[in-house]
Length: 92
Image (cartoon, rainbow, N blue to C red):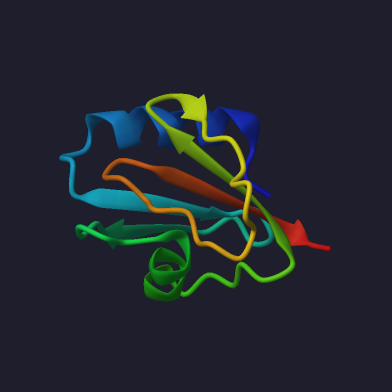
């Protein structure tokens, strides 16, 4: 599991990186994947590129230092923006 201190460092790095990446942090094994961002990328497409399983797992998206609220319609995938940090929780 990613420790809070390490997690904070990833958030700081994400804010300093050029605006063409999204970061996926997998809490189950502590890996961090940097995914090139493209216009129209959504959570599911980014997770596939990062090779991170998101089904049945808690997802937290941090954008500009704030947590993005959940969508009203869960069947719609959340659009990602450059610099987003996606934290994927442990398998439930």
